[in-house]
Figure (cartoon, each protein chain N blue to C red):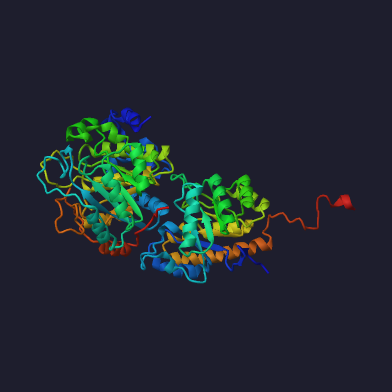
Length: 255
Length: 367
């Protein structure tokens, strides 16, 4: 049985989706339904509890896990404050750490992300840190108590796919925590590729939110993530299978 | 190092001879490049580029959707005081203009905040004229504290402050700074700012940078289009934006594109900026600076603003009054300039949704 357990919860979907950039918040429930996603991220800075109509939380089904993110945080201290606010506002104890001090490329600050992860994990948060794929930082995140590591495939919003493929592959091989590819996934085929490689899940926002038909695109990602996972389990061609018995070139040595 | 050093290097370039050499292939090449350099930017501001507005618009639309999604940030200005010691030839608040002056009391600021926040807006831009007597920093800080409980994001558009003073307003609750250079051309700057502290060009030019150093979350710059040749002014504004973005990557830099509007006073020395000119500026800025915020105010007409929405704009004002006390008081002041798009917040909200854009009322919170 292929189970995906994260933060002590068994998840039925390996597709996480974001709620920014949609033309109308009202279509978000339909997108979630079509994508079958169970983990939904939203920028806490956009949550408006004062407004019933404009409150993003009202558009997220109750059976989904809320994954508030710390978008807007420029350092660990701000990320920690946002995470605590999220908890106080009733968004649960899952948090996606986003520390970005570069508004040009929106690249994460791994150093500050590690610091925030350590503080929040100690406070009992299920911490999912968004990071630039770097093995040493990923190891530090493991030590800091992260529940998963979320490397970027390409800068946020660029839809360029797995530009950092080799670095992500190293994380998949070396890091014991689930690797969830976040950012840069622009097409369902990119998501499939990430899962085929052995990423446990992907997080997608821009590609769905800015599609002509976000609901249909949500469905397409749902299928691609499932296909990618099945392909991984099936051992896609080209993968090194250590269990392979036959040794056509060196078998003579054992004769 | 200040942007002034950069400005000195480009202020005397021969724009006309540069523009004369631009061909259609230069323009197409600039449009199709992934990262534009300053020459590409100036190419897209050339007269001949006006024949390629549709191509530029397609690219600008695509980049904007990718970076900002189908969303539009909403805000409204709140005028605290229109007392002003400056004599700026283009402004209704000019010391010499015989207008009705008003300054809101703290109670009135709260009334005004209540009235504005009831429309659902969570981002406010507070403005004052420049008067150390009527609107000193202490008054502005008290004002910020008074509006704080009604809004999630507070921007200021006031006279330039020192870095320490910016830190002080940030501590009081301000997160963003808007300060327009008005006109980058130093000679014209000196001419239109007839008297008053605003005559100090350098102090104003370096104000956005002081705001960045003080750790403002957002800094918004702009030139008042119409005070000089717009191609040059748009170029200098874009360079200023890039300078700040490169040097302070943790600050969200944005550019406003205000066109001179009719106002009380007699200034008529205006360089024409047609609708298609403003469109060209928006598109060139977006292609040059893909991540920069672009703001259009209610100075522009309803139908024109609606058409600008998919072209690269990320922030618009709604439910605007440029009078002190304009949202809640029976004894409001005269206005700074005439607004053109008089729609209220609900009307703007509906218009955005009908065009496939999500109105963003809240995109920040005090942390």
